[in-house]
Length: 212
Image (tube, rainbow, N blue to C red; front, side, top):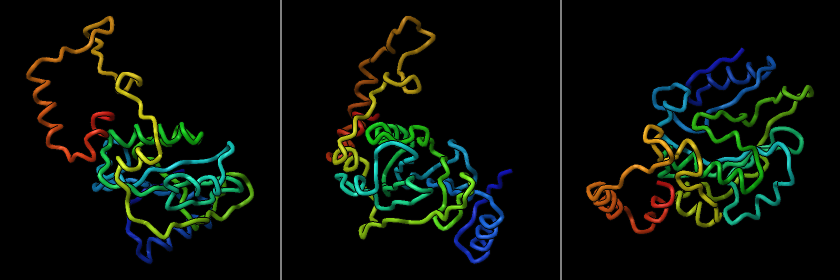
């Protein structure tokens, strides 16, 4: 059984989480935010971080710490396995999915943790999943916990972002038009796009052109 609730870090909340963990429940938290307190992709209205889930492969904590931008937080979730987090600012929900997928692909980590409402195991709670109890704990925390801009993260990490059309969910081809015919780009639409791009900060303009 699962129990979802929205709460702040009060004494009552902490006691509830400790009790759940001691009662062999796997405790997790949603990383992004939903102001209505619900947990579905459509409810998420604030992106807080990018993350990875390393359950197998050759990636190690030391390798992560040598990345162009190391994770600001690394959490050990079971022997040899961990989560890594990068705090981010100014990220849209559409950008999030593309960057998450590119990050997982580049580092060879779990590609299924790209959904907006993903919950991740909470540090300080017990992982009961593998039979022997394991205390989930923080193994690394950066001295710099300031959020990173999306454009800087993608540029420094040299991530390859899928272009529209490479993923069926982002394909700009109308099924009703058939046979892969692209939607018509009228002069009015082109002028509207150009006007929108002119209003973006110069440092981030390339990122929007690439991600959309």
